[in-house]
Image (cartoon, rainbow, N blue to C red; front, top):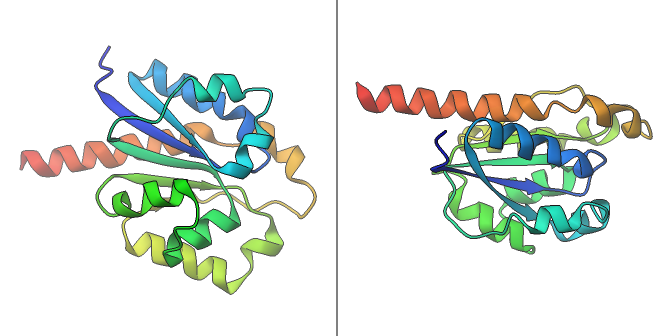
Length: 170
């Protein structure tokens, strides 16, 4: 099994955050080494799993990045160049050079905002892959947590890397 590929997962403070262990497990099964970066607010969301996430350290230059569950706040700050949090400082210099996928977890009220739609478009223009999932009704996010498509983000990253590899071979 090849573990030379390094995946950095940035976990934001949204309902599915404690279940990010699922993404870690899938990635490891596929041969990825995994590093976790928690946003400061996410630390409270994953308090029962904090020791697990902290055991995945933060060193190493990633081959790919997944931001999940990505919040309205992180998506807008990332698109607009804000660097007021450590995870944003980590992401900004890599956003156009390291394959990155964002798996949003945003309710319909936030998702309908023009600023959010504009931020998604800006990130797409910079080469970021946005996994399109249907926004949930406000207040109903808890019901969506179990169905959060962690695997889709990893599938997208692996497809991007394969596409880059084929392009380099030709």
